Image (cartoon, rainbow, N blue to C red; front, side, top):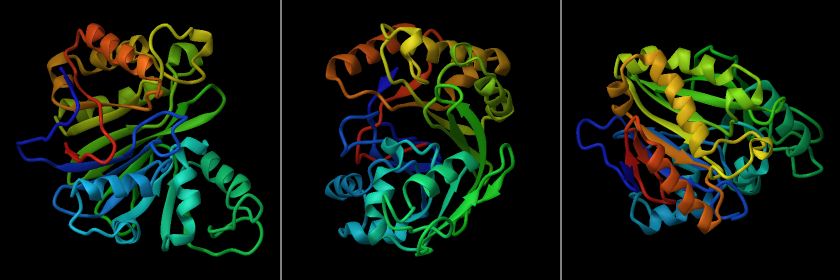
Length: 307
């Protein structure tokens, strides 16, 4: 069940606008996803590799009721949730900061410290944050998340819980569990499989979301597949392949205890490396390995879908 654009026709709970879907190289199409409760324009932005180009593409498809990218950028994006500080997940935020307005950046401590030390430091870029070196412009207020502790997202009705991921151990990434009115979306930043990373981070995450799946409250999982299966395990650099994704989904299936429940939500594949040959191969390999019959979706930049 491979789909490119999916609308939940029955009682949609969230809407998603991908601003960037690729995992590197193409600077105009890097990881960034707007998510809002259905019926609102109160978006949070999962990662921010690409912002303006994605907004402009969405406007060209008449996704927004306004035609001004600045208005969308300033009024609709209420907060940023940054999984880790690699440039393909932060460059849009940095470059567009001079034209943004006061907002919160939510992240785990390591990610926030990297942004403060390496980007908004009055050397690489003016300090648009409320901490760090040099003159503080105080446009962005850092909100340090505590692992596995729910936090309210300012100016929205949503709450978020962060879980640590391993992105080429010991480098840390983050999974964000977003809640609104009893419905959930799970977004994973870059992550390697537990077996390769020698951690239990994904296992802990799956254990925590299994009860939500059993209650049929999880609407979607955003999870990366960066390489085809031919990528050697010792050169994954903290990423997944179709084989490793399905192994992790099998772990989740065991915890849930009913594979039919895993078909009640969408599995949104993100962070594909942009080589055309590899993307085609990844899609073929996912289709072949999808013994659980997961509802797999490949998002397109600027094309809205619902969950």
